[in-house]
Image (cartoon, rainbow over all chains, first blue to last red; front, side):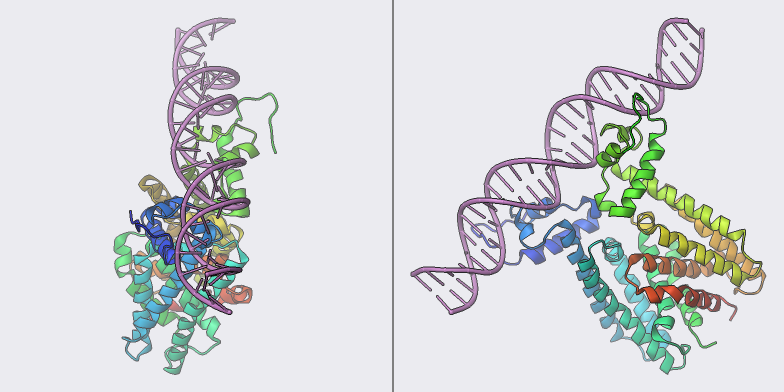
Length: 199
Length: 199
DNA sequence: ACTTCAATGTAGGCGATGACAACAATGCTG
DNA sequence: CAGCATTGTTGTCATCGCCTACATTGAAGT
């Protein structure tokens, strides 16, 4: 337990709560996440978190938002090492996304779970939008290279996006045999390339 | 509130709890689901549910299991009205799956959320397996018709399965614009057909 | 028909939680 | 240095999940 002796102001309690919340989410799942336990772990009183988050759900929503932000960064970083070909860039992005998902299984569940607060939905929708924009940009590049059929971005990009997301979700759900996951992504990438190729 | 005056044994409390739990899940989400509230709603004491479910998580797991059972039935029923062509059967199954998902958004989330109890995982994995077997059977039929490329069932079927699942998940997540969802499934079906076609 | 026992209820207790209110300490700004 | 915003603390309350012990009912066996 971390206690800062003699200090009253934590300094950056909000960030510390989010970090600790993510650890608890990873270890025990969302149902076991407790504001009071987070406060104890960080050496503050049980009501301190309420100075930073309106309620428990607000903290979970903020955590989901950080997930999207980190996903965005992960995908942007992956682009820097991709070859120029569409197939190579798709493969790199797919591996980056599934890598992120696998390393953050519970966080991915939280990110995409149904939100009941309209305000939270707006912020999270915007964050999810930024990440799917990377798919749209990739599809546009594929179209320029003649590797992807013509058509409005969202109509050609959506199938690609839902395939990657579906695979990532199933990979982290624990419901697929490990051997299926191991080479499944390569099969999925090949299928995407064929699925969105010009007819 | 339903109360059975003068009765002590409910008669079928387990089923009633599951039905009521699904209603609460639909209306308020998993975080708001409360065993005591379910008991109050059904006119029994707060400890009665524990005679049927070891704990709250056991009830949620049982609810997820009923979801898979109903999904299985929905997909089997959809096959009866499908044409013989692979494309038609795929379309019918896709619409049935997304229809089920859309009508049961929170239940779908629950069904595929990460399970921490190994016993629950086994039962749910078996249930999910039965539903993905229908995909495998469909893919086999497509291969016989020459509409799907050759290859092991699980390697050709997995991309199809994750695409449908990813689309259903995104459709219910509330993160896609409605107009994208409206005709998105047709785009996804066309993409699947092309993605798994012989090269 | 009666007894026994399993199934399924009820009543109560306990510790933990989320949320709220009132007060306290600190740091920043003018 | 004063004032105020920010960010803590202490305390309270209602509700919850889970557990134990007891009560009621229904089914099975004799």
